[in-house]
Image 1 (cartoon, rainbow, N blue to C red):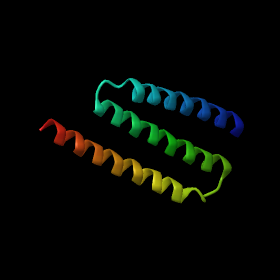
Image 2: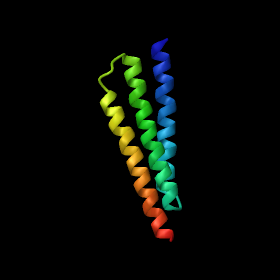
Image 3: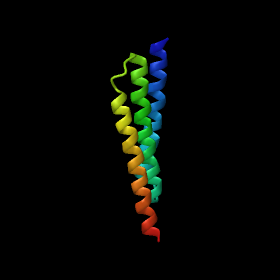
Length: 87
């Protein structure tokens, strides 16, 4: 049962990452690319969290915290840069 759940999670997260990479490559504007990069990072956080849940270990918690902080700081700084470029 757990192996089936892990396979389904892997498939769904892989499709999500692929779609985010496509938007990151094709995005017509900078903000589209920023959102796609944030979505890709959120997918990575979900994948690491799912791996930790399936294997039942909490040693990846610092990795999850660092990835989340990286995503937040990166998104905020890029949006602030994009707002300055418009004005």
